[in-house]
Amino acid sequence: MENKLEKLKKEILEKLSQVKESQLLRDLEIKYLGRKGELTKVLRDLKNLGPEQRKEIGRLANEVKEEIKTGLKRARKGLEGEGDSSDFIDVTLPGEKIEKGHLNPITIIQNELEDLFSSMGFMIFEGPELESDHYNFSSLNYPLDHPARDAQDTFYIDHKDKDERRDLLMRTQMTQLQVRAMQKYGAPLRRIMPGRTFRAEATDACHEHTFYQMDGFMVDKETSIAEMIAVMKQSLEGILRGKIETRVRPGYFPFVEPGIEIDMKCAICQGQGCPSCKNSGWIEILPGGMIHPNVLRQAGLDPKEYNGFAFCVGLTRLAMMRYGINDIRLFNSGDLRFLEQF
Image (spheres, one colour):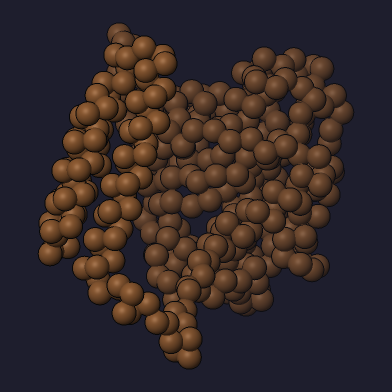
């Protein structure tokens, strides 16, 4: 095998000395160093050698590989006209501008909220975007014939698992992780679950088929809806950097009882009415309530011993309020003129 390696090295170095075209150089590199190259084939035979011989031949093979790489580099430099005569660098020429990347405003909001909730003792929990009907709906108190399912038209996927047929779907809400988290960690528990969600929406200035949410919950032996409202107001003022005007009203969600909705005055139109707030002057920003006993039972907890509150905040809507963005479709547009502002 030593002779084979030496012969291979001599062969490629000789060919490199005669290269006149960059394409031929590329072909030689692939032929000898590619995944199916000549040197790779030799290295595959190492497994058939004894430990001592494998060590020695391996060392020699690495030396040969480095010499071939050096030869390729020298040949490439010669083809590009960068020999000794062109090593001069004009330091007076302007440098090339290196463009910086930009975080999407939703990512900025999510990072700040994670820090804020972490400071209040909440842990971060993540889960699958492709979810089962059980976790996305049934475990959250949505029976198959429940009308509330119609408000979350989603993308279903037919999936066969051995002899059992079950429906998979792209998750419509981050609440689907609530039962998963409680089943895994038990109680007491504080968790936030940020992520991307999907619904078969007709898109407009305030609706999109792909958007971001952050759900959270706290389960313990004694919690109250007043605690939830306090946590929500603190998080809103922290992320929007100042006092905000809010209102609390009753709301219905199958997985909480009682349910509430916290609205904030639209920061884009200052309550005057615009397409982003459906001309109402208010944005629904934080729905939530006390976790329904059926959900606690699905998670394996006794509702007579534990209770808790749950909430959901739209990261996309928060970003719109924070930066005064009047069209939700801009976030996923891929328009660099939009992203470069942040």
